[in-house]
Length: 235
Image 1 (tube, helix red, strand yellow):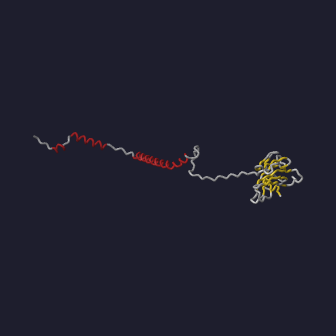
Image 2 (cartoon, rainbow, N blue to C red):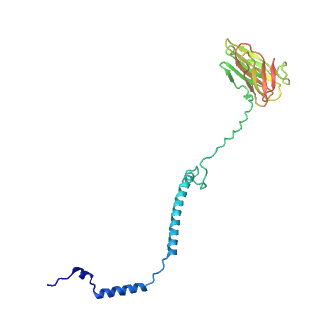
Image 3 (cartoon, rainbow, N blue to C red):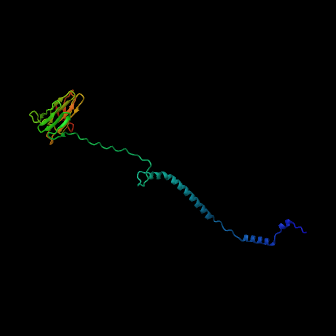
C-alpha cells in the first residue's frame, strides 16, 4: 500500500495551469491603461456644487420676499399690482370751510294774514298799518302807518305794550331806516330780548315788530339791519 504525502500533493501544480498563468501575466504587461477623465469629473463636480448653491439662494430669496408678497396680496386695491410699503403715513384731513350763514330778514306776510305771537296775541298787517289782539283785549286794535306823526322818510320805532302778571306782549311799527331790517332787540335787566319782524310784499319801507318778554325793567327797542347796524330805535 502506497502512502502519498498530502503536502506534496497540494504543492504539485499541473503543467497546464502553470502555462496559463504565464500567458495571462504576459498579456497584462502588454495592456496600456487608459487615462482617467479628470477634466470631466471636475466639471461634473462644479456643476453639482452650483446647483446646490442655486437651490440654497432660491430658498433664501423666497423667505425674504414672503412679507412683500403678503403686503401686495392684502393691499386695499386688488387690481393694483404695484407693491406698496407695509406702513403708510396718513395726513390730517383738511378742515372744510364753514358755510356762511345769511342774516335773517323779515317774514313776508299777505295783507290780513294772521300771525300768532303767543296764545291770544295775534297780529296782521294791511296797507294802512298794524292790527292786533291780546288775551286781555280780544277786540282788534290798530296803529296807522299813514298818520301825520309818522314820517316814513325818517327812521323811527313805535311801541305798544300789553302786560299780564307774568309777561309783556310788545309790538310796534318800524320804518325809514337804511338797508334791510333784520332783527329787533328789547333791552331788559337780564339782557336783550330778541323779537321778530313782519313785512308786506313789495318792500313797502315799513314793517311790524313783536316780542314776548318778562315784565321787569324793559327799556330801549333797537331794530338792526342785515349788516348789524342800527336801522331805527325807540326812544
